[in-house]
Length: 223
Ligand SMILES: O=C(O)c1ccccc1NCC(=O)[C@H](O)[C@H](O)COP(=O)(O)O
Figure 1 (cartoon, rainbow, N blue to C red):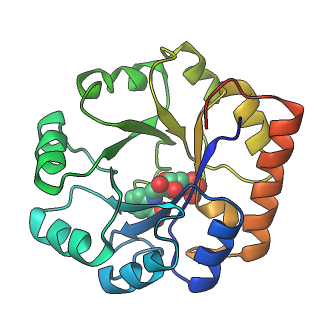
Figure 2: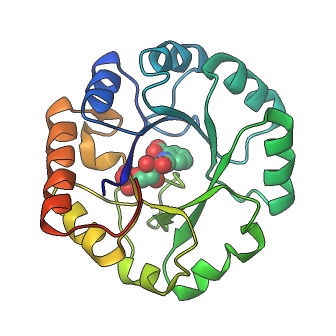
């Protein structure tokens, strides 16, 4: 079965079109001013319109306040909110109720203890996203192009729905899928030629690698 594939941090028509043409199930837009992938809500909305109905539109925010979220939701009209900060379970519930949208809650992972942090969110977040801890000195909670030890996910209860993220690229995504049997994967830097610049050829190569992994190593999950 094919995994869900989210291409995150899109900023150009070409990248949106290529991601969707290659079968991205999700496309992400970053609303975080320090990121090279930061995008204005109005432009994100225009880009999202090219993909609407074919891929889920994901708004990625970091401990955003409701003024900012109001504008993002109004302009982007996302299908999903990805909360990539330290939002509490109560905050997740509040935002789900306020906007009527499902939530992907992101967690950074270095060791097994980090996975226990999801416990209070089970039954609250609709999906988890496991990313690597930012490297020392990084201002970004995500999009750092670094991986964590994927074997940690083998101990997770199979009922936990998650996206595997962090440092994936065409060369390692096959191993990541084989090791974790993840039902969903997420990539940003691994399909960029420079920070914030998506590359259509690298998007192609990433999907080629995912397809090859599916042939070589059948996955045990639903798409
Ligand atoms: O990508 C960013 O710049 C970013 C900034 C602030 C919060 C989240 C961000 N990205 C979230 C994602 O979902 C990325 O795809 C994820 O962190 C993986 O990135 P990468 O390791 O570069 O593939």
